[in-house]
Amino acid sequence: MKKTFLIFTGVMLLFIALICFWGYNKYFKPNPQIQQQLNSQFGAEFFTSFNDANVAKTLEDADTVEGANSLEVPNNLQTNNNSKSVEYEESDVLSNSTPANENIVKRITENQISAKYKPKFNNLQNTALSRLDTLYSAAIQEYSQRNKAGTLNRSELIQKYMQAATMLESNVDSQFYGTLNGMQAELIANHLSVDIIDMTKSQYEKAKSDKRSQLLSKVRK
Image: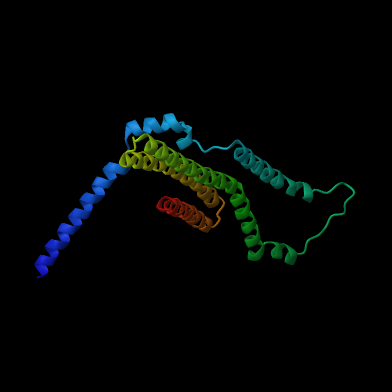
């Protein structure tokens, strides 16, 4: 009995593996001809370019402001010839270097780094979601046109737009994780917590999952 069950389980696993292999080759395996067709229809930059001049300017301004703020501290400490010297007691000096004040500085620094990268993450997410909507609209339009013309091939159409979505997601993932790695490296270089990295990653993956569910619900209607 046990042997029969093991054989049955093995056959089922093999069957599932074959189904998955067939599905991958049918719908997910990259097809150069389809890729060329998609690049011609939407433009290669539609799948690969997510840069935004305004975001780049924002990041540049953030660096400039951060640099300017770092230069203001010495100026505030300078005194003119008419100023009286101020004596600091040892207790004041010690209180200024307490762990509590160090934690405040850390929080400010983390917020600065987060604010520096947030516009780029937001732009990437908004651009990716917008382009997924574009792909969905194009698929619906092409389906309708081919159906009216009597040239509809559902399998072919599914394969085309599955590959389009896969191409887009792959390039968005590459851009996102490249930027996230840069943010993590900057946090580590400043001896800061990297907890925000996992939070940002979770938010990104959730946004992708929510978008998939939204598009699938539209398809089922």
